[in-house]
Image 1 (cartoon, rainbow, N blue to C red):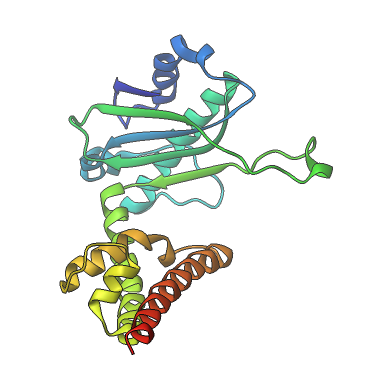
Image 2: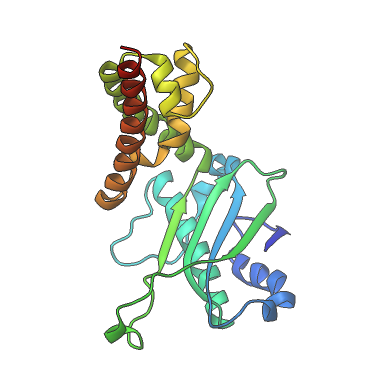
Length: 233
């Protein structure tokens, strides 16, 4: 579910206003399930002069000297209070984030709540352990996405180039990617990028699964062409 609230990021009572917007629908959320909340604010507020005046309660190891300190302190303060407000109303929040986005107005707060799947615990721990809670502070989501995309491009470009050096045939690559035959390098790379995006950042097990899928598809295409060449002799 998604809610829009007219409120300020610098309002230290923001958590109360957020939960008050959601309360009329609180019974629609199942208490035995786990949820993810994402709080979005206008990213331009990072440059607001009020950021220099931020003064929120700090933990012993936290500093409040630089603008960066103040940004993270304010966002951490707000998401922790909002998370606590939801928990006080018996919602099991296991993923809470606050992020800067390009919203329609500086005084707009967007609230998004969705179910979050949890990996099953081993049987012996089933009744003892609680899901690990994740809290994310993302000052600028556009910047984070741009950086992520750049890193993904660099890694996938290397993988694609190595693959093309081995295959050396764009029509065969087109077939491996299951697209219409093309000699266009950009079109081939875009198809590869879209299909194998997860290769750039994944666990070892996930990487094995994805690579095995690519190898299997490559072998199918090569064997098909090999059989065709042999039958023509």
